[in-house]
Amino acid sequence: MRIYLVGYMGTGKSYLGKMLSDRMGFPYFDTDIIIEDQQKKKISQIFSEEGEDAFRLYEKEAIRSFNTEDAVVSCGGGLPCFHNNMDYMVEDGIVIWIKSSVQDIIKRVGKDTERPLLKMDDKELTSFVKKHLKSRKQHYSKSQVKVWNRGPAIATVNRMITYLRYLDSTRN
Picture 1 (cartoon, helix red, strand yellow):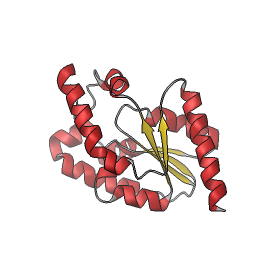
Picture 2 (spheres, helix red, strand yellow):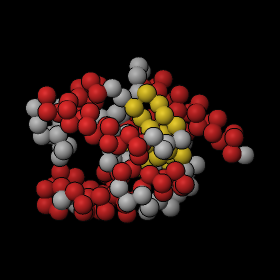
Picture 3 (tube, one colour):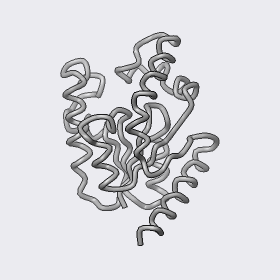
């Protein structure tokens, strides 16, 4: 089973993805890390030197490059919104939308200088995140599973596993 984790930046996709892969015994992949390794550049450097369009193409290539059947894949926040990536992931595996409140997202990413889209003050950042979440919802909502990242991380992972087991049981 290939499991894709989607959601806005700062919702915990990477952290929860590593925990989920450990619990499931599946290899873990992060599309941002794959791109950085392949391009030998940080994401912020790709954005500044090549632009967002080039980065989105790298994401498309990364998401279609997996050759292992069982995997947990954390996706960049914008990845589902470009190049029919969301439709591809829904067809290829199970997509989990990890949701968080705007306030929690701001707390997690507000001071992160490695995130190329977030170089702004708190008021601008809150407005930006709300606008982005609204525009990305149409893509994220295609996920087969939706999970709020609230409370202890292990509880969120346990909820994901419960949903995954249920979906797996209905497919057989």
